[in-house]
Structure formats: structure tokens, C-alpha cells
Length: 353
Ligand code: H2U
Image (cartoon, rainbow, N blue to C red):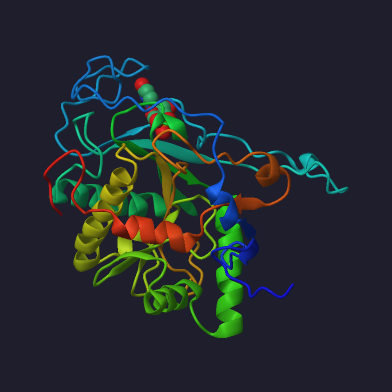
């Protein structure tokens, strides 16, 4: 082949040093016509208050408990928790010496956190102070739950397309007695990198991405928002603090203020991209709570949005992705460029950040 390689035109694979996974990038496919499924646009006319919505203030939840008339954030134990503290471990006979039928115990706690009393708001549309209170509450919960659980997973499923069961702005917090699979992989990879290169992988990565600029979506004094070099979802992004920070509760006042700014900027750009309430799953990853040396860790957030071409055409992680290798069409650089180009003023309002 005599044509020189061009990553914007030619299929190639990229390595994710955080997980050890590869992603297949096929930029030429972004030009193909789409005859597949078109999702119904998400219903955006959500009532501010619905007495039958169990996440609203004063509403009655499925278990009969009445929510307080909350005015800021509101946290409660999930009425249908996936993880419970009071669960026995499998006995030693359950460990199989042929390596084929191994079980391990799983204890934990699941909480739901409402961001705001109004159902028609999102983090992009809430005020700066309201979002700051969400960040403070995340940090507080992280600290409190981290005293008991090795891993505290804060995540937000936004939009029905991402399995969110309720339009009210909220996230979930699942704390566990074990390191979840992805956390364990990252812990190992971050540790290996630190040992090999004598550098913190994510701090080094963030520094180099800021120099290169092509995948940076937004930058301020404390944070960078970028489309990772190894992104799998079309508009996947990461938020990384610029200084070494292990966990959410380690963020100082300046980092929390600038996180509020950059998060709202990103979420506004997301919404503006296809003029829709952009669906996504997001989550925070920080050092495990294991009293070990975790200097190889660096706090970060990951946003995984499913939309590809419009408010109604999504990326499906099916066939090749499930059976062989994650695959994407537009390049991370193209995705970053499109996000960067979006206004910081939300399309539905005159609100400027
Ligand atoms: P999702 O929209 O991401 O599914 O989160 C909503 C959570 O709220 C879900 O986990 C919980 C569900 O179990 N929930 C309650 O705990 N009580 C209720 O009355 C309704 C929903």
C-alpha cells in the first residue's frame, strides 16, 4: 500500500491504557447513509411537579414513605437496592477448585440522590450554586460511604435511551464491599503505568492532551474536559483535574467551583449538539478506600452518550462490538471539534455561563 496513513480516513485501532482494551476506528464509515432505527425524540415537556412521581418533594414512594418537601438535593436509600449489607457470603464449598464455578460475596448499599426539587431541570439548566451543591453532596457522600465501602460508585443515567426510569434530575450511588470489575482493571493499569514510567498515567495524559489541543473540549484553571484518544462512544468525554487528586472529597473549593463551570459547559454543549436533552451515562472513578498507597490514582469522570448522528440516531453496541471489538465511526478528534464548536449558551434559554 503506497498511500500514507491518515487517521481521519483510514481504519485503525487505538489502545486504552486505562483498561488495556482496543477500539477499532473506521472514519470512512461516518459517510455512509443511515437506513436503520431512528429513536423517538425524547419527550421534553416534563411537568415541574408531579405528585405521582416518587422522586418529587412530598410525593409517596413505592414503599409508602413520603418524601420531605426538599428544596435542594435529597438523598434516600434505594427502595429496590441491588446491593444489601445483610447478605451472607457463599460458603467455602462454593469456591470451585476447577476454576469454573467460582463465587464471591457481594455486600453493599444503594442510594438515590435527587439534584433539585424541580423535575423539568437538568444539571445544564440548574444555576451555578445549585450544581455546586450537587458536587458538595457527592463529596460528602463519597467521604461518608468510603469509611465503610472499598468502592463508592456515583453514576447518572440520563434520558430514557440510557435506561433512566424517571425524568426527575437524579443520580445513584452504589457502594460495595468489593472492587467492581472496571475499577479493578483501572487500579492494576494505573499501578503498572506508575511503576513502569514513574509517572501518574492520567496526569501525564491530561498534560499531553492540553499540549496537543485536538481532543480538548474545554479547559479551565483546575480541569480539562476531553474526548479520550481511545473513546468508544461517539461523543464520549472525560473530566480530569489538573492537579493530583485521589477522590471527590479531596477537591478543594477552587476545584469544586471550576468543576461546576466545566460540567455545565460540557452539558450545555452536549444539549446544543443535536438540540435535545442529550442522554448519557456518567460516573466518577477515584482511588479505592483500602488504606493502601493509591498515588497511582487520579480522580476522573466519564460521560458515555449514545447519540451518533442526531437527536434520534444512536450508536448501537451490538454485533461486532459484542462479538469482537468496540468500534467507532467518527474520530475522537472530529467529535472534540464538533463539541468545541457548540455554544456555551443553552439552546433552550438565554442563559449564558
Ligand atoms: P434510574 O432512573 O437511574 O433507574 O434511577 C431511579 C432509581 O430510583 C431506581 O434505582 C429508585 C429505583 O429503584 N426508586 C426508588 O428507590 N423508590 C421509588 O419509589 C421509585 C424509584
